[in-house]
Image 1: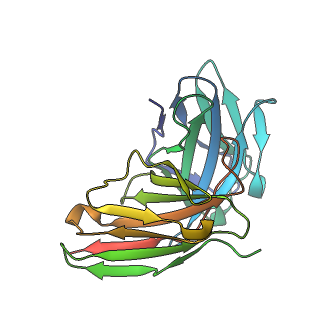
Image 2: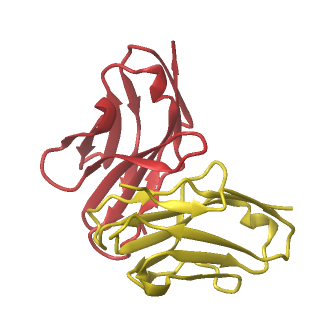
Length: 114
Length: 115
């Protein structure tokens, strides 16, 4: 079975400071990892993904994430947070073997204070 | 490019009633997904279609939920009869094809409240 853990329900950061939203996963086989963002009353929007290759992937709106196979982590980062980044962030994983369904974490609410 | 469309956006029903949701995916997207997102949780896949065939419905409560995708384009998800625990946001998503590396594009969702 595959699973995703987002250990923090909420992350608070001041505008202009760097931010990190944590994600760890468990799969059999090789993981394909995704980050999505959800704004109020809107669907999820794709931010970035790791499939293979460079462990550091860059995505939309200045976000990036680092794949760490030994720690089974895929933390989301941004060098300088904006108030408009405040939203709900979901990490998701799918395996290249077994059931090919995307499994989401429970989400982390990011609050950026001006 | 138009996004994934869903209707209605909100629905309130009483338990034991039936309800249906509609989804129109992005044009040309072969794969369509229905997710259930309960408050405070991440989305959970209910059913996945490839064109008009079911790829995965292992987590669909088939005694009360049904879904179809006629002609491989739009789709409907039905609940009959509804229970209180079905209160959730129902998200539809689509992707260009089936494959683990392809990101999914989500609609705005239908918020269902069962009283």
